[in-house]
Image (cartoon, rainbow over all chains, first blue to last red; front, side, top):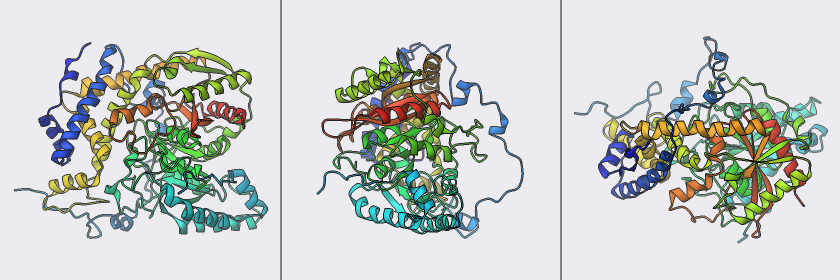
Length: 110
Length: 483
């Protein structure tokens, strides 16, 4: 039940990889404080290794614990055309738009 | 400078509704009275981020014309209500307490917003909160912290701090908040008001800016258990636009309030009364238990053995889900966009400039625990422990009808006191994250006051869809409170 991976320290390289995955640009100061916080939080999380969960099912949703998430009426509705969001209102909140599409900077980088 | 704001809130839902129905008061005048009060008191507590004057007055006029026509008024007719700024209202700023959503004007109403308004509520405005509902003190709002109306140098709790403070200061009769790990119950306790955590699936989340989707719930704040129960009755029920909302019928919660607690079995879990609990909070909750016992409830010691693992479990699951949910904030469709010559740099710079420190911390942690090589060790492990925590409750509810615990280990702490230590802040949620993980319902109800005059709340927990019993016990706690 011991998962040694949990006591591995998060390195600056790990942090930068994760920030890249999350599309976050971090300043040097932020990197230092996040590295410290991440390691102290993960040390705390390592307490979970005290519990043997080898025979315990993982729970992703509350319904799984109740065994009542099987009624499709709760998550299916009739496939009928209904009014959707008003395009003009949606586009009014966009940082850049031509009224029909969202405009963004160049997508392909060379 | 005053040190507290006295609650001058002579209104309940029923007094407002009957005053309008009988013609002794008008919804428009009530709306004006609350807007005037907000103008006077809000600068000191920073509960409201924006006001929706035009929409509220229009609604008030329609309530008044219903009343003058002699119609039976809907349950929230003319009741001033505030909405946490993570719920969207068409055309009204919805910031989620974040700079990244500055300027965003949603194109639609959340289902709960529509239901409140259909029931006659006057929606006064949007309430401050921790950024994306991440925090336990409201200090993580990009728009400044909310101050606790009971002691202005203290936090109101979080993340729904504005929602709790608005009710406590009489700036709304009821408000909506959201609770992912304690964000309704803990601020209710800190501000001395009632806050309800409905069962997962009880209330639609369509139009909620998501934080952690397997945990997020929407629920009411009010001054009394009855008012909170009335609001829940209005917003609860299945919504075809939220696939996680339940088909379970909504019972008449008000009918439950009248029932005595005599004969109810109420569990007291040893794990919630251990080390770290402030002695004044302990004393207030113990006194409450004694009063319930004297009123005929059967008090039973119980054990919820996995309680101490709930905070780490919660912080893995909640941050993992948050890292996925917050991927949508990229500067393309709404909110803040940083200038950049390429798309990928625009994403990074917009997120860098738009998110605050706690949100970045949680995105990084969540991305880490979901990343290749760590998923099983952290995320799956936490989901397994979540099963154990849930089973603890299911076992306990075989034996008892409700559970009573403290809401938070201490009364409201001072602004800045825990701001530099994320784990100390996370431990403020130690008694609330368990119910969040298990999906059960609960309430925070005032049960005492500390020597410094700070409110103390008791948490009543009930089984899934057991809100009726929770209201019944909370109503007794309220009734039995010494004057």
